[in-house]
Length: 493
Image 1 (cartoon, helix red, strand yellow):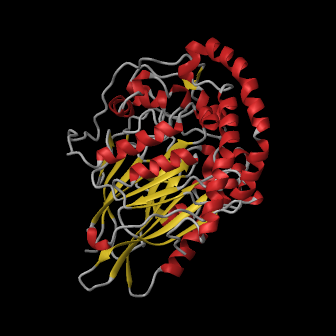
Image 2 (cartoon, rainbow, N blue to C red):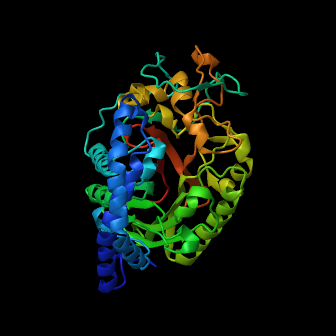
Image 3 (cartoon, rainbow, N blue to C red):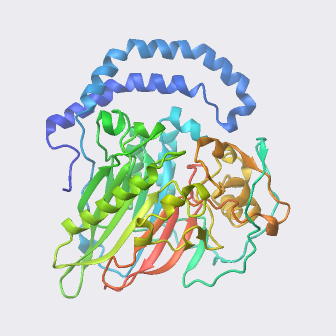
């Protein structure tokens, strides 16, 4: 069922607004209190000042939390009466028209409360949300001034501004100097999002104030935005965070459904992670048939450790997507494509994630970066930044990050490796030793690719033909993931 308004009645809307105001004092007090105990790497040079400030203001914030606790309890109770998701009005299909080429992007934005975002070496989510929306919208209003990308060109260059963390040695792997394979599509690193971006899928859009600012900005380009899906219950998310999923589209949404995962561990128990499945109206054919597309975005278990949570979530994901398509696809409708994307939190090469990458769902959808299960194509690049290097000057701007992602030595330093045996938070806070020469960089270095955009090979009328796969650096210093974009052509017109 598609909800075109956040609540089923005006009373629920008023209660939700009231709960937001009641929760605000306690939320701000707790957030400010906890921020003082976690420094960003960029704040290390002034750590003595931060420590002194924390010792002075922490008792004040703690006292304010105690004084506002009755309001917080009441607001928390009212918040339990929540809505499935919010979905503003969309433009009619006649405003866009049916075309044969589409572009979609997925990215994890890490818009958490600042106290939580600091564990990812990020802060100021409200400002970042506005800047993210501004950069995305600006990329859709410019002429394409990018020089033609060079697929095999990877400029060398010295690394600078390196943060003094403990170095570690890489074990295993071999230098990535295989001869390049010839693809039928372009694979590039771009400093701006593709023009005419049709769909945007985001994960970790948790903070309410940041969410509202992000949505307000994105509406300048995307006529339809679904955000804030979740299910509030003790078993789903301990009455804490919703799913953090957001879907923005230039095309009207005909159906949408959210499902939470039944299995979660550790920090993921506090969030209603799951899948948001959407059916969009692309237009009408010359025979007056509706042409539709299916897009599913998901955010799966992070740092699962020795527990096999990811395969269980993949089981549910496969069941949900097939069931949603079966129930919503009519006989007189043409399905043009079926896309699955999001932050899967496992890669195709790490030895500790073999069960997840060999799941049947990963065979139903085409991953253009995968050679075979367990081996990516030689040109692939990781999508998860090493958080301890986040504030280094060598990756501080879209142009600098783009140059780094086209250098094997820089990839090895600023991106995680695909050598994970036991996924945990320690791996993002260690810096590897970097080889002196590009040709000596191990094959596993900087290639942990956990953000996917995949299409179902039998998911529409005619084959999907990929035109370009690109990593986008326009959100440099705004998130710890690299946005992934796919531009593809379809046979329906």
